[in-house]
Length: 343
Image 1 (cartoon, rainbow, N blue to C red):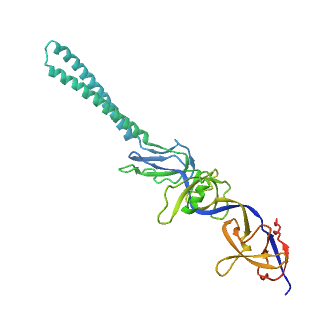
Image 2 (cartoon, rainbow, N blue to C red):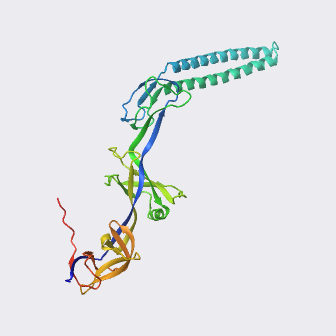
Image 3 (cartoon, helix red, strand yellow):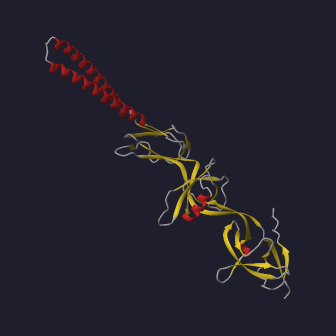
C-alpha cells in the first residue's frame, strides 16, 4: 500500500475561552396586573390591546356616579361634625363663665369640655371618611401603573367589577430590557463566581439556533442551591428595544466560564477515543510516520479540546486522513488549509 495522504496542523499554545450553554426562559422586567379597586359597572376601555402604554395612561372607566354620591355624603358629614364642634365650643365657653360665679356645677363644665373633645374626634373621623371616598372616586378611573405592553382586556363594557374581589382587568409587561433566568450547576457556578460572575457579558442563543444581536450581563445569582437538582438560578438582563424577545420564550445563554492562558488545543475531529475512553491523537514524527499518541483532554473551548498532557507545541498531528493512517506506517503529510468561503 502506498503511504496515506494526510493533512496536519501544528500544535501551538493559545488562549482558550471556556463557555457553557445554559437553558432558561425570558421574563419581563416588570409585570403589573391591572385590577378593579372599587366596585361598579365598567363603562368603557380606553386602550388598544397589544399596544404600548405609558404610566398614567387611562385604561378603563368605572361608573363614578355611586362613588361621587358617597363622596358628597362624606363631605356633608364633615360639615355636620364641624358645626357640632362649634356648638360644643360655645357651650363649653358659657359654662366656664358660669362655673366661676357658681351658677352651674363644675361637673357640667367638665362634661361640656368632653363634648368638645368628642366633636374634634368626630371631625377627624369625618375627614378620614371623606378622604377614603375621594380615593375611591379616583380609583374609578383606572390608569397604567407602569409603562409597557398591555395585553387583552379581561373584562368588557357593562361588566360588574370589583364586587367582593379585585377583578383582574388587564396585564402590562415591561419588555425593554428583559430578564433571562437560567440555571447552572453549583460546581460550575463556583468557577464563574471566582472569575467575577456579576456583570459578566453573555450571549443569548435563540430557539432557531441564532445568536441575539445584543449581549446581556449577569445581574445576580440566588443565594441557595436547589437540593433536588444541585443547580443555582442566575438572572441576566438583555436590551430589547425592538421587542423581539418575548416573555416565556425558551433560549440558552452562552456564558464565558473561564479563560485559560497558554494551553494546547486541537479540533474535536482530530481526537478519537480508544476502547477504554482514552483520547488518541495521530502524530506525525520526524520521519513522516504516523504514531498514535494518548492525550489527556480537559474542557472544550468552542469546537476544540484543551489538551492537558500528551501533546507539545510544535508537534504535527493529523486532521484529515485519520481513517487511512496506521500507527507506525508512513504518510504523505500536507499542511491543512480551510476550505475557502463560498459567496
